[in-house]
Length: 341
View 1: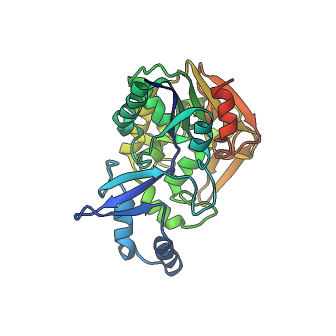
View 2: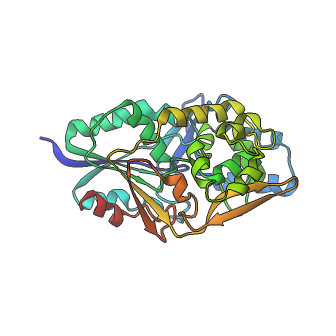
View 3: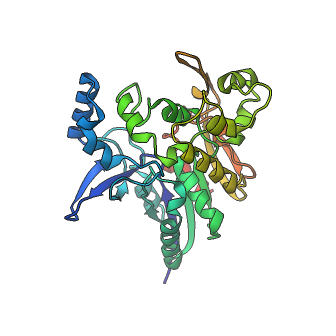
């Protein structure tokens, strides 16, 4: 006899444990970073050590120029919180299961091209479908791109499909991280040099950079600034950003081009999707690169990480939730209300 309801939950970027498997098949956690890892990075930052001084640290976490992992990495569990703080997903499963939903989390390697997770997500969905009368999908942040990549090739007929704080069209924050190697895995200027060494070849980060939809819509609000930023004068094409314009070119052209192709193939149809977006918080909406520095411009139409333009999905039911941050919008009580109106 089948159970009644199941939920597949796809977390966002940084939201899954990563383990390195050595030749003896021993597993060692490489994400989240441990105390010794943080101490090594601090020494590197303070003393200005070369990459060779922490070569092993990088090799365990980096990807090569084709976006493939440099070492044998497997996933662990979905991360509920970081070091006891920043509670992201702690109460998701507990709340849903108290209300009659069996919850299946989907851990994945968030560094890689989101398309590489299609088959694994399909297996998770089919298992839930075989044992439950109905299945719903909830995806957060980068997880929305993982889910949409899967949905492009499969039609599982979910009871409900809900995207929360999605990064459908990208965020200038991701572009800034890839372009400058700063402000990524940790905010507030911590570990800037290490971020650049690690993330230059992370395909998912390129897929989170603003796509053509973002530029064509966000720039309408600040047309002059976008043109100044990318030096495209009277003609604008998002491909200039990644392929042609030397001042705005990203470090890995292959991954940038692949990301543009990915978004083009993905399309922009959210038929039947409930798309929850935070708004009313100060959010980076565009950048201006000068000869010596970068200036930031913010707008209140966003969740603190992604603007409403970045999270918009055509033909979906787009709902803007005021004063909810990128992570705070993953609220079990709020989601339960949408799952069971």
